[in-house]
Length: 180
Image (tube, rainbow, N blue to C red):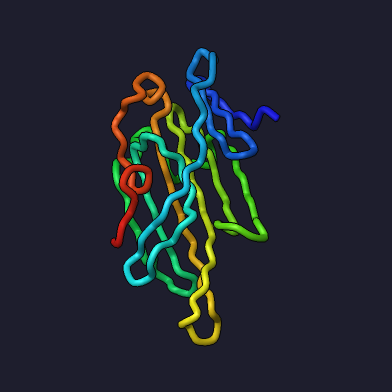
């Protein structure tokens, strides 16, 4: 199966069933080598490491990460780097072409994973919500806890296609997020 595609007057983008992502610029020609998902770890002070976080290692202009613990109203981690693309309206992302995927797994991490690929002009905005559970035997009552990790990555696909050495601005993709 060739995957699902969306496009506009600048970019044609494809996402395969296994989440492999590729794109080509106008005029529609050959697709760039695809990107596979990477697996990362987030270290959270006082809670240890959350492993299994999935992301794309791409040169982001903006990246944000928020980690929430079930039952706690404020995020335990909230970080952002880079600058949001000025020609993309964050409040109007649903008006751009997008693909939406939802996976729920009986086993494995994350056990629930929702992701959106929005093509806003020359930019890809990749949003994901990943849900994790882990054992916490020291807790009384329930012996597990749930985390929700929200990741947002914005990349200028046209610039990246022209210059594969474009600089990264990433929380996860380069050095990771350690003990913040």
